Picture 1 (cartoon, rainbow, N blue to C red):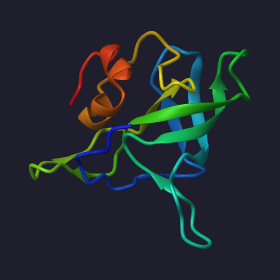
Picture 2 (picture 1 turned 90 degrees about the vertical axis):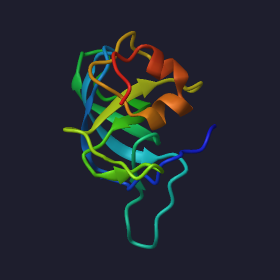
Picture 3 (picture 1 turned 30 degrees about the vertical axis):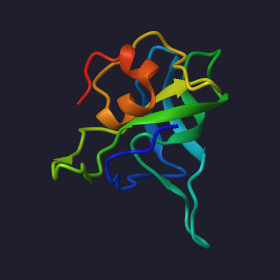
Picture 4 (picture 1 turned 90 degrees about the horizontal axis):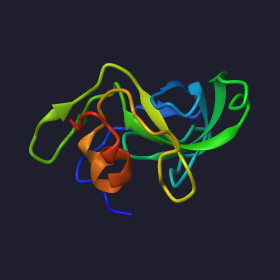
Length: 132
């Protein structure tokens, strides 16, 4: 997996409820775990744009509810900095459901995704309407 060019401040943690931004059937998901993120003693692991998380579906279709899936963070409200000095933030936090190979489960994404995500996961960026 390609490394991130930006210094992404981690804006989400375990327990955060987030909007699922694709047409996979999930509407609201909750982060229940992280992949590769470490935490200090008695602190929750934190994640940011471009990180993979383990989520539980809280609202969605009957077939998707109460499932545990992998998701990719595509937007976050927390400001982060790119190497050229530009600071970037989005209006909301959003994830996209992915499978074990890193391919998106849905066929379309609502809203823009960050360029850091597009560099790491080109298949997710291919179905997104805009890359910021």
